[in-house]
Image (tube, rainbow, N blue to C red; front, side, top):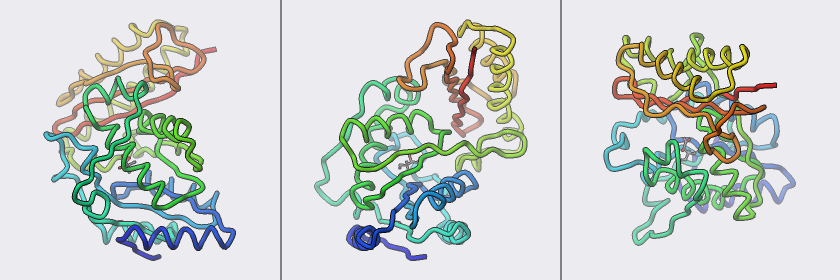
Length: 282
Ligand code: PAF
């Protein structure tokens, strides 16, 4: 496994690889890797001849009061985990390599980023779209994979790739969960023992919503009310949003359709956790 810190190194590797007729799969990450990231890398491994991953805690996607400084980092452990996939190339740039002095360009995807996380984290998706577009230009992958846990992010990147005619296929990878259902996230490390127990309420509320739909409930307001009550019955939790949306547009629906996405953002102690599930009604 090769570790590159400079743009020209990874670009040269990618161009050589593709010139040799091999395909490149790419998984961008902010590091502190867990099984969820590794499953995306395995997915890239299955579909492409070579796999590149990036580890870059992107300052542009953090708000001034968010956890940029506290975001967990452990490069040695990440490299060890990636070698088990195995990943061929890791791009781990310094912030100045990505945003040199004088940097002033941003990418904005509008409608799909307006609500949900976009409403509570102004500028977040602009930071994500900007860094992902830069990474796509640097790595020049055939395929890029993003976790479905960050569903709005996945929709935003797919939209950007279509809108800007990017020559890369963007795919989602299923959410990997702890045995009790909690979606894996680097931010789970912020949870104390008691908060960790309460955090199970996110995934159990998705199950509750599924059961309500299976029993014939089609009214989003009823489902959202039950989900909120279920989560906030657990100590240390505060629901930021719980909404039922169309999985393509990310706009709220007024009735549960054949495919409706339940999206959640919940503060548990100092951690802000997100989760989602597609609800299917016949
Ligand atoms: O999902 C993440 O870890 C980040 O938002 C991403 C896609 C690596 C961009 O910084």
